[in-house]
Image 1 (cartoon, rainbow, N blue to C red):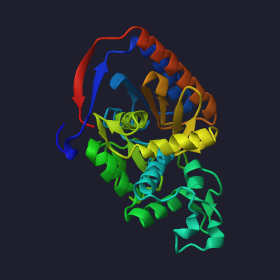
Image 2 (cartoon, rainbow, N blue to C red; image 1 turned 90 degrees about the vertical axis):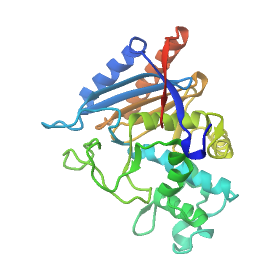
Image 3 (tube, rainbow, N blue to C red; image 1 turned 135 degrees about the vertical axis):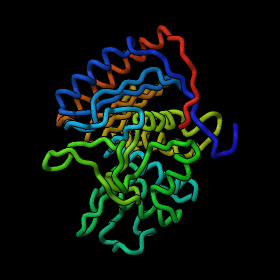
Length: 325
C-alpha cells in the first residue's frame, strides 16, 4: 500500500453477460417504457466488477453523446446517502451525541422553527422535512450542522475523507456544464436538461459515473474498509446498524432496508442496491423514471439477486485489472 493519496480499489472485470442477460433485458425494456435515453448497469461481487453494460445516448436529439464509462448521471435523492454519511462522519469523529437537539447547534435559526428535532431524526428521516417560511429542506439543515461541527461543507467533507483518498474522480457536485453530463427529463417542461447548482453539497446536482456509484455501494458493503485500510471510522456503519435495528422500516442514512438488500433510488431512476449476504452491489442508471417506482425497484432487485445466485454457482474466470477509483 502506498501513501494515503495513492489508494485505489482493485476490482476485476468478468465477462458476465450471459449470467445477467435477464437483468439487461429488463433494464432495456424499462429504458424504453420509462422514456429514458440512457441506461447502464454495473455489478460488483466479491470485489470484482462481474458485469458492466451501457446503452443509449445522453439525450434523444441528433448529435447526443453515447453513454460510456465516464458518463455522469444526476443521482438526485440517492445523494442523501452521501449527505447522511457526511453527517455521521462529523458526529462520530467529533463525539457529538446523536440525540443532540439541532437548535442547540444552530444559532441563526429560531428554536421554534426547529422544534425538538434531533440529529437522530435527520439521520433517520423522521420529523419535519421543511423548516421555516423559506421551507429549508432537511438536507440543507444537515449541511449547516456539518459546517458547525467540522468547519467544512458536505462536499468538502466527502471529498477529503472519501473521494480523494480513493481517487474517485467521477463523482461531482456540478457547478459548470461539461460534455460528459447525462441530461435528464425532470424539468417541468420535459426538455432534456442538466442541473447546475452550488458546491455546498445539499442540492440536487450530485452527478456520478455508474462505476463510482457502484464503488460507493461497495464502500458501504465493506463498512469503509478498502484494501485493508479503514477510510472512515467503522463507528459510522455501527451507527447505521444501530438505527436499523431500532426501526428497520425507516430510511437510515439515506438507505431503505429490506430483508435481502438495502438500496437508494433517485428521481431520474439512478439506483444502487447492496446485498450483504452475497457480498455484492448493483447499480442501474437511467435519466427518466416511472411513477411506478416501487414495482421497478422490487423487480430490478429481485432479478439481480437471482443473477447473483447464478453467478456464485458457476464462477467465471476473470481478467484482473487495477482500476483507479
